[in-house]
Image (cartoon, rainbow, N blue to C red; front, side, top):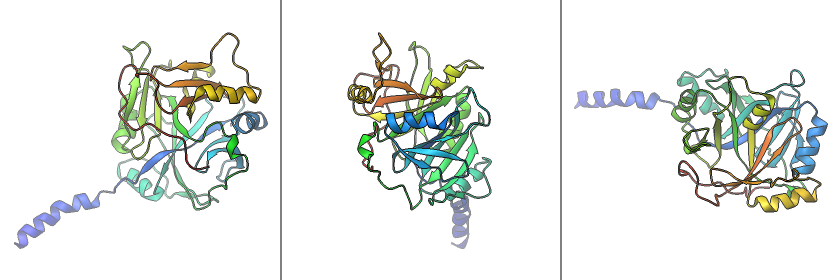
Length: 304
């Protein structure tokens, strides 16, 4: 009997020693380089209606909140005129320190400790297999208070972010095998090709999108389109009315409302530095090309 107990304990020890992965619940924020913060303020604050709050981390910058837990952070670039405006993408987690230890146990290079920001956020940063900065944030106990102009937001939920990817297999190992993301949808134009791969977070409805179609040395315009963020809306038709009421004008002779091959309506804007803001309806209005959705569709945020 003693031998049986010892054998059972020996078999159980490796499982007990494994560090469990804490929940990853969605997009936390994106950090973008902005050549002129005042020009960008007009776009994110005045046009999009997102609340502006100074950054609380080490970088000097400013944040534009779409809800109390999601934001775009703008920082000054190391030099003006950079082609790549994306500094990093960040995901929300329920336990940053546990996730740091989990990734370390999986062989990922991680910092020695998480960083605690002045608002209580616990964060750390790693690099994905293509050397992109990926951050993880455990929201702190002092989120920003609801602003008086909260009703002016054109979107209450950043539901996905996309960036340039060349090696899908390497990214899949990082996002799927290590972090637990799953394939949400994939497709291309033409439909015989895969240009876009959406990987949904394991414990929420947000996703990261691999943009696979770029050349080895993309232009500023190509990078600005690929490295993007997507605020969700219920109706792009209603979105266009709100935009026009704030002075925005659609391109002459072109309907800005487009049906994507994923079956969702979208309306693209471009911020002052060329980053595409892909407003997208939460649910498809037509059958998606190429593959079926495999996960739950996102919804507006019920927080401010």
